[in-house]
Length: 326
Ligand code: HEM
Image (tube, rainbow, N blue to C red; front, side, top):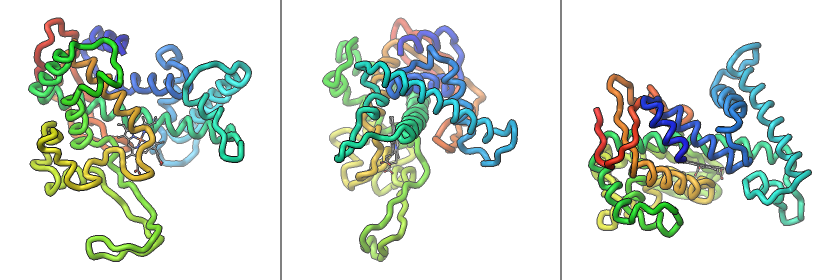
């Protein structure tokens, strides 16, 4: 992460969303297949072409976004094939997701097929870094707009002695940071589309009968804006998650950026860890301000992001004091 922070400070003026996406893609690729996209720029380029075409009109004519995305997907799968071959010829002690999937067996001792492994890796690559990019960019935006919150985060880090080794134990002590992250994910959830569930047994809810076999949908942003749960729900207010107020604890499923129940996000704990480490390190020594004349309204497909990509001035702050914002 320090490489990225230094690079951003050197560049000085950033469209931060794109840079954050590069950072999270690099982490996701290291975690999933043990390859750093910082070192393998080709992988990053191919991935970009593919993800760019995910929501394009599915018509295959030469040069179209969709056609290029299909070809990029084939290239990615070929790359995964090579990585799987290498792993099988030279089993290493690498503990990435690819190794775990290759070693996985069901109750009858059957391994996953190659196609399943590649599909899973690709699925997790999207699920695992675009959402995180959205969350990190919202965190950075809200901290620039609320310097008093940033100051409190810095004070917490200072109180804990700015620990250089971040363990589960030190991260657990960052309780104000935890509140801030919950509030970021409440106010600007990365996933805004409805989640669906199949009704397995006829039931009743709020006076309505819901027959077995129906699909029901839950809404993340609407739940997070519910004024019966959250006071002044449009406001950024991390203290709503303090132990005294704990607004999300009055009803189950009040805070659902990761969905809920048995199909809750598989990467939830990893995502929380990654955001926490990023936040703890960036607030200590770095400073940023939002550039004027940019559109901060959000576009939400496929994941929530600021329309102009969050333009900022970014620098290393030796004294460790406040953040300006427009
Ligand atoms: C801030 C980051 C993230 C957010 C907000 C997020 C949000 C979500 C949401 C809302 C769902 C649907 C859950 C449901 O229907 O109840 C989901 C599913 C999923 N997420 Fe995440 N996610 C994040 C990060 C990650 C990461 C880092 C990974 C993997 C490394 C990941 C892997 C998955 C997978 C595999 C599913 C499908 C689970 C299933 O269908 O059983 N996510 N995520």
